[in-house]
Length: 250
Image (tube, rainbow, N blue to C red; front, side):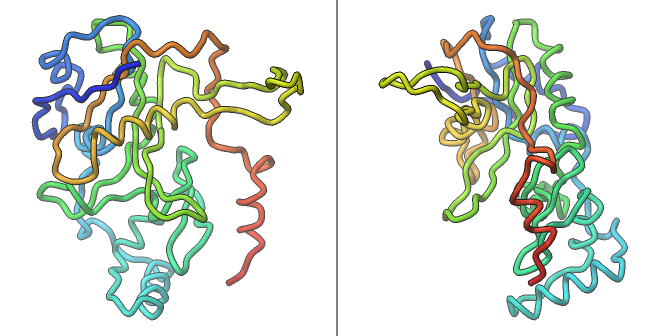
C-alpha cells in the first residue's frame, strides 16, 4: 500500500474541475483511491460565503449569548445561524454546538470552517458529499474510488483526525461478524470503518495548515474483496449516544 500527495493543485474556486487538475499532475491507474479534502470540494461547489448573508433568529442570538457567557469570548449570532441552517438537529448547544448535518454527519459547528476560506468569512461543507464523490468519480478517465475527507474531534480524546464524509466506488465498512479470531471464537460486533481509516492516513500527508496538498492517492491497496456497504452514519434507532443526548438537559 502506497500513499502520496498530488502536488500542483491550484487554489480552487467555484466551478473548477478538480479531476482535471488531479490528472494534469499525476498519472492515475485503475484501482487508485483518491482522497480529497472537503475544503476544495466546497470551494468548487460555491459553498464559501459571508456572515452578512445570515440573519440571526432568536435561537441563534440565545445560543451566541450563552456561549459568550461561558467562554468569555464574543460570539457572532450570525455564525450560530449558519450552524442552524446547516443542521438537521442540534444535539448540544453548550459548552459547544454539536449538530447533525443534513447528510447525517455529527460534528461540532456543522463542520463550518473559518480557516482557508479565501476572501470569505466561512466555508460550509458540501451539501451531499457522497453525491459529490460519485460525480467526481465519473469524471476521471481511470476506474478510481473517491473519498471526501474532513477533520473531526472525538469524544474522550484530544485532537482531531481525518474522517470520511462522502465516498464512491468503495465500501464504507468491512464487516468481520461471523469470522473467527485466532482461537476460533466467532466475532459478533466487529465492523471496521475502512473509509475513515483511509481518510485518517491521508490526513497525515494533507496536514492541517498551509501545505496546499488537499489530494492524496492510495495505490496498491488490497483489503478485499468484500460486499459493498454504504452505511456509515448510525440511524437514530441504533444510536444510543444520540438518544441519550436528546434526553439530556445541561
